[in-house]
Image (cartoon, rainbow, N blue to C red; front, side, top):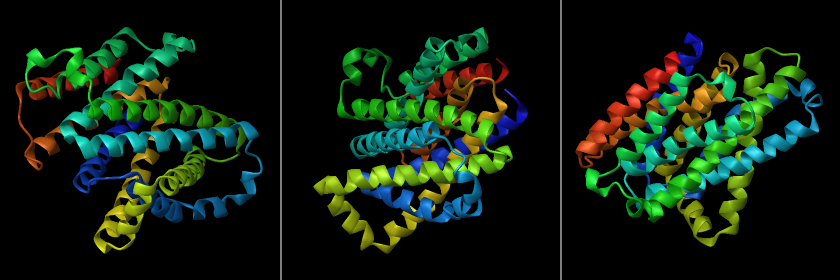
Length: 302
């Protein structure tokens, strides 16, 4: 992994943990994330107007990927909102962030890209996943399947599936756009962020409007200035965070490295939960953070 990619991903990790912490404290819903996506779309949409002359060059396949990433993002936010409503961030966040590491790696291997993943990198990914599974446990004797069969774990799994989907979809879409559009990588990244954000807002909007409880939440958000401001700030940070991740994809040989190294946000998020949220400081949490950190080092040098 190049130094540029590492810097971009580390910055995004701090930002990612930050907006998740804010979202957790606001008891998020699908409607909340829909409003954040609307604000993000409004802010980034001028990019599409500026580069409107190249939109006609985008293939049908890429437009299909844009729709697919919107679906995957909607699944991600649905799972994340459900997990945060039911559990602590020190439980939901690590699980939602850890599982995609193995999912993305497994799919990359099935697609025949495993030769680009070094042994040390694979070991690091396994350590990251293992550490994040240990981290939420109150005691080590709770390390059994039954400890994870609850709503929080289920919703975190849904979020992980969404993350896996949009990570792979976005990587492929960007590869195709870079091979098609006569623009610099930074310009292509901004165009795709605008397309992806718009697609996400559309799918989140459909989910919100079709589900009565979410429509009620949307009305409450519209009547609360503080929630509206929080949604605006969160939308901007989410967009900027993933923009850094997308930019980093141009500097790695395999997208699995991006998915893994982004997990630096896990100890950051856990620390926020343990300190500002005053969540219990169980020994497995501390050890889990250490294991994740070692895994990140392996991924970075692997």
